[in-house]
Length: 546
Image (cartoon, rainbow, N blue to C red; front, side, top):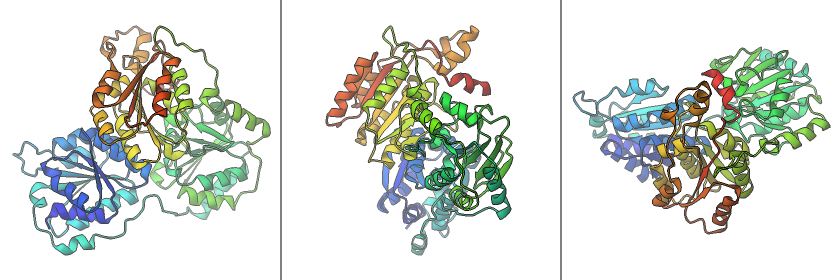
């Protein structure tokens, strides 16, 4: 056995089931070894897409994601996706060939490259340590929730490796997010005191709380807290009568009113960034803010907090339930009625602005929400349009929304949907893209068809980079650099093997209904020509940070 094979076998022994990538000479043998060990290889058409697929797969499956790429350009092509994964603390192992010879045209400083975007670099340097280093990379990704690059120098890959190493590497993997450590009793007592003294508490749960719905709902029931999430945890409290949906720029008017009116906001596994707090405007002026997180460095990192508690969200919530007295808190019958009547964006009245061969994106998205099956998994690209699918398309739970927005790159949405679809084949995958991101990632349309994914791809086409149009246009700046002529996106999709419909008015959604009734043997692209006379409602808040 050579080193490349030992690394692949070791990772397969750790439980790796799925690998994404683009294969070149430098990662050919390690990828084949993973496949021989029982893993499925999913080939992308570009390494950037493969990186984002692996990221989304990890988020939606709860497993460590694995990406395999060629040395040099294979890794540089993947960097934007790796930056998103690293910023999101996605547990991901990247296997990359490495040209150690400086005269090689493939040679770059791969360690420095990935460190610059927050990835942890490691390297296999000999046959004797190959399996051990592979397991170390896997465990670092799993237990520390880090994106890890395992460099595989070309000369080392070909070295012989003792047969016992691969067997020794078959150590049971350590699962991510299972640490049930509790803070000091004094911290728990302090947080219990804040809750006991609160008459209007609100819980805001983030990615670090996605495993703790039952515990948080039990504590909220005891203390009378209302429930909200950051965007990445959307759906966590779906079905609760006290679910306010998302806090931040996407918040409904009712959610913003109630969060601002709280006297205590607790962030649970939530970074409380400017996006989740609307640049701090949702933080109650006369209230207090607490934060619970496994990572002590996260406490107060984005905004001052009155109390920071280091510990696992589920464990802390369970311990607090035994320490606080029962109270009605924020919950009243009248408020429950308001949440039912006003708690979703589709409940907020609006003036339909569709005209001239363009559909209002709210009307479009509400129509899709009514048509598409409830058991869906939604991935959203970045851009002016993104609030419409994020807020008007419902999701069944926290495993129904894949939101790769930590780096805010456009062009990741389609690959995110592919990775999510591979992780959750039991749900209808839905990709929501702008025209800019769709054209940027169009190569992966072939991947959707090749994998046989029954995906619905919705393109909100305003023939522009809409965020820039609505940011700079009102100030009289020329917009030629951010506007484009019409493109027949439906024809492009058909060329890849999609069924496609063009939507300019609500009646055109009949084409979507017809596809849903049929065999769904081809994916569907919905080319929606949307209105473009004004920016999305969340843009004004978003651009305060620019």
